[in-house]
Image (cartoon, rainbow, N blue to C red; front, side, top):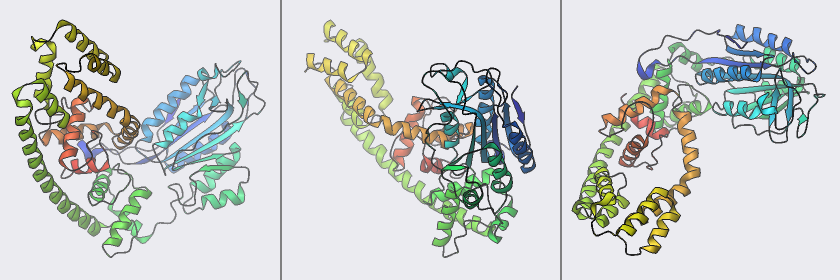
Length: 491
């Protein structure tokens, strides 16, 4: 049975944006020592040592010991949810491992007659654990304690941990379970300890991978005077988000607007302080927070006034071009308008008029051309529209087809960029309420987001593009840090 032990009590939720729970620490312990069809291995005692230490340290931890794969996955899933709000993340995995050269799995309790085809149902893939930590750079430490190199395995599998890619900002340690447990107990969770130095000098059997240094969230060290002053303020998660928003408005990137002050935020604060002629400590006091807020507020007001004038000019040009092209209701004019203003003020009207034409509004269109056009539309590919143009070089929908082809080609070019932007947006808006807030703020700007439900559909994406275009941002339709910061001004 998966055991969840809650050792830190979350603060009561406040309303809306400022009301997220305060940050805490979270740990995941996956230990497989008692196997049903394989010889048992060690490791559970070391997990117990870690557990006691984590309780003392105030971690929320998720524990799965010698269970089925689905039970281990349950612990991983619960941990992922908690990890979104955690300041520090610690993952300890001990047991028999197997790899196929590309993927490594932790073998769970009931594994039997394993091959590269069957291990997926009886193992926990290491890549999934690494991907979970990848969303929390500079805050995650993963410990891997491989046991039992004598594991009997079938075709395509080798005992032990294979090669793996360590996510940026994540540290991974591989070594004996007792040594890893002692290292965490005596060094990693000891303020001021020099992690990499101690590891090198006292733990030669532990290998370090990824980003691993003396300065991490795990070894915070003795607080400086500037840090103690900031700590005394007792800044809530929402107040920290406001500070990150203000830094972003002033073009000092904190690396995110999540209320967690990692290296990126500290560096942004230090840069801002130095530009004010102050010592760049990376920590704030009441007076500095007020000054930061004042500067950001003034800058935001300037930017919004600039955006207002830009929006007026864009609207004037939009209306002017509509009067020149699409207002007459011709297919050619409507297509010309949509090519220049796909998200324009008259785009919905133009789309509706074009749809009417395509449904049969043009009596001069032959049955054959209408059938071929409907076929091209139903397939919706570059090839289908090109086939229509080859057959009807002077057809009624040549301009629409040309628009569609250009749009699809641009979409193909943007696919890789789109995936990267979507991943960044997911990390930025990982708290559900933020997605609602984005839609609410867009609606307040007079933009149509569709239903305000936190689900970014095509209409929401269009509203985001319109907002970005009005502020001189690249109109991707995906929320990035500068877009979010501007939406949260005066929230």
